[in-house]
Length: 301
Image 1 (tube, rainbow, N blue to C red):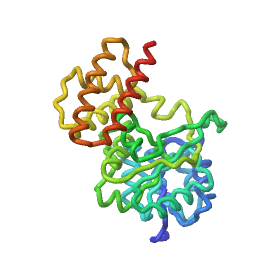
Image 2: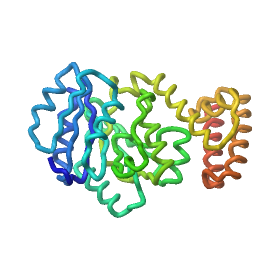
Image 3: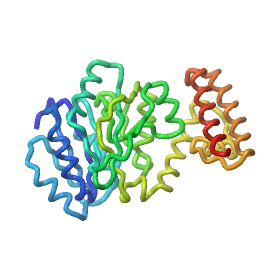
Image 4: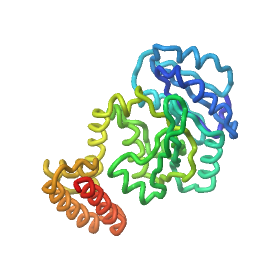
């Protein structure tokens, strides 16, 4: 294995026999050839291991967890052994466009102050047909703001400097079982510059067995913990009513005019506090709060 590889691609695999070959082949055909592909089998009970073992490319590193420990435990194991200057995330049911790795490496090489880069994606269905585009905020300022609301990265598009993760001691928090990716990028954004490229670099597959479909309620619950954790930076004492207002507002689930009024007062408090502490540029922060409130108000009309 090349100890000086440019990129380590970390790919957890769990019962992905229907799509794994396409995912692996999309990486083996990249225009950038100097990378390692770390496949971590997370206790698959289908033919995923057989499929992975059928590829003899020396750039592939195979890890067998033995039992299912979860997506983020598998990612952390991959991070521990990754040798690349950059670490790239990929899922076993997605497809990378041929220029994906080269595009992101070129950008990070040219922008040394950027620690993590994501990208846009085409949405595909179970049969591989493109069914839409997945837009995301692009600039660091916008991303920091929208991370208060939701995970605004398409996680299998991210590439991060290994040195940034090492220096800041960042790994996936496995306690956030179904939202560890949201927590991961939120912590990265607090420590160094993160951005999204405008290019579509992968095909992101939507299907019935993915976590966002099968564990949606649990995912929202863990995401709420991350949303509340981010309020700590404002040094505010927040009561239960305000916590509820913050979460329903950020989820866009306000049900009536009374809840909207509570959210408006909460936004005023956040705005005043941010104006003093300047955790975010005040004008952009107020614009963001106004956008969130207007979206909620529109849903009531």
